[in-house]
Length: 47
Image (cartoon, rainbow, N blue to C red; front, side):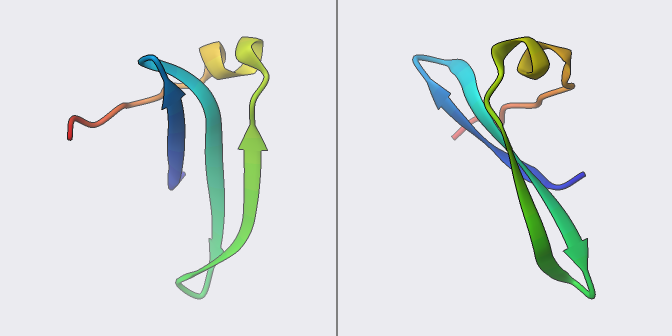
């Protein structure tokens, strides 16, 4: 699922999960619950 991740001090704080339709973002879900974030397979890219 496409998305983005906001981090603070190197720790994930909010995950943005994008739902797409016809090559456009149709919905954005924000996940900020730390227990839920730890269950996700998050990949942080280097600058």
